[in-house]
Image 1 (cartoon, rainbow, N blue to C red):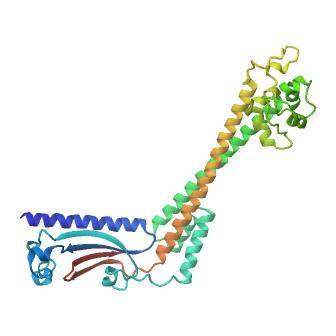
Image 2: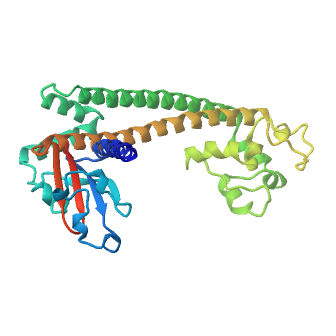
Image 3: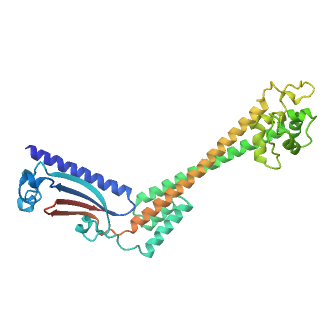
Length: 339
């Protein structure tokens, strides 16, 4: 009774593992193929224990009857495993010995089908899948669902890009206008400590060349030289505080020349930086949507190529096949499923 229960449990486990092998290979491979689940019998140390021909004691020995559980010895070991075999195969025996054939090369029409589907998905994700759906004669509805899914994601990414890009550019116009209103180059060249002691610097070139030794110096980039850096620097670095119209020395009539106890974050500078931060936040999101569109195209191209290739394969070896082999070295029960 115990042996019958153990035998039933063993074959239940065998079927579960075989089912897992079929699903795992079908979901992870780009090609059609065969899942082979093999039942192996190990004869290690049996000759010494039994003292006779080891081939005569196997439960798979056809002379003793098929699957005679009573002949199963404790030194025999059953192992079940699955592996991927290529299709189309020469024979079941050839598959088990690893001598499978990769099959004929794809016809020119199938190569064209794969190329068209992949190029279409590169132009617009889901377009290649839609082409394969129509090419299949409206048979596989799952392909249509995937095409719609890819196109919906692409539409969402485009909407997100445009929305964030427009908001980022709007905040950029705001901080540039605000900077032009409240910060000036002339005020900076008069109020910087190095220039202040000289009665003002005659030009920004003079400042860059001669103020390098001042502890409050930072290289100045004029607007006409680099517009982006010009607006970035006026809010980012303390050296450009002296160009804002609300710093303590902006009014020479009330300025006492004390540079040691300044409040560097004036209200106008603080507001300018907050506007610039908002602009950068939305522009960064727009860039992330662009990266998402690139990644989506890669996924759709690979997916469309896989679908086209899968539909172009030969499937003359689909279905189940069974093989029982017995030898003095080992016995083998093979259950193969081609898909």
